[in-house]
Image (cartoon, rainbow, N blue to C red; front, top):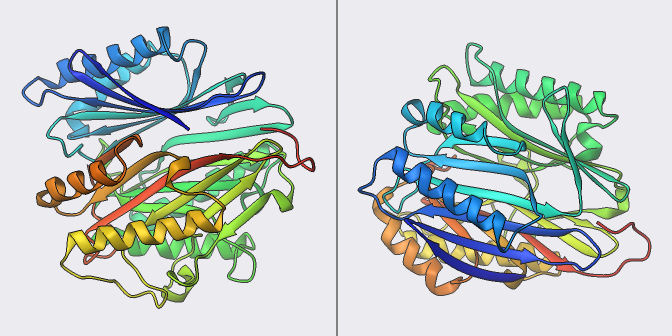
Length: 381
């Protein structure tokens, strides 16, 4: 991965690039507003201007396939953001209230690629096509039913129908999900119940496999929305291309404490390996929270857990293209920011306010990695 930082007017841009000659190149971009005293409109314009400038220079020819905006106050910010987003090229779009903890009102993660064909499908998913593969991205799905359990069930049922319309199945083709839960301490239990039941119905069990996922605090602009969901699936993979990561020396299977997701998933293509690490916190292989009350030690154990998962996929942090770090207590930002800047100065990252699904977990992270490899048995990415 090639990594760089650029300073634009009132914005900091972090880029990681996996460049391939005569193939599909891919990039992760994190854009941060840098002047907390500015109005939201000014910060939004700074982020948007930096993104457009990047597309006109280093990333000319790249197209966005997925975007996620992190906002500090979605109810008062979404309308202006939606107006600007409507002027930009179409892609899967996620907007979540998870305040950037550098004191600003907005940050942006964009995943871009070169050498692909893209289009929005009639059912709302976003298709990215190349080689023999179709990548299906979904962003910002939500429902407004009575509680988090019913909203999660409706979200998953609709997503299953979307996949079926595209000739796919949840169990075979979905690689990654993200669930953002309003008031996670109260509403996460409903999400877990619905997801467990739907997964069982779809033959996703401890004996088969689950799906890499993050379930974290995050708000929609509408207070009636308790759960929103982002998704990623790939059509064209064979079972041998997908591997699930367990790191049993450090982590236990999630079903042992009543939830249903994989710690991580790797996908082998003919020319590279993709690795998706789920939201990972300071936990041991008995499912116990480690270092309660100490954010420094929790951060170190979190890194150790993620590193072990990456190593199981034959990768290290040097192959990581982006990180998202979630904090329960905003007062821990200075410590966690300093630790990450020292340990991973070049990896594009954002630290946001996002309480984890257990109150005593102070910090959680997720990441995506890509590593060059050759496998004649599979089509290239």
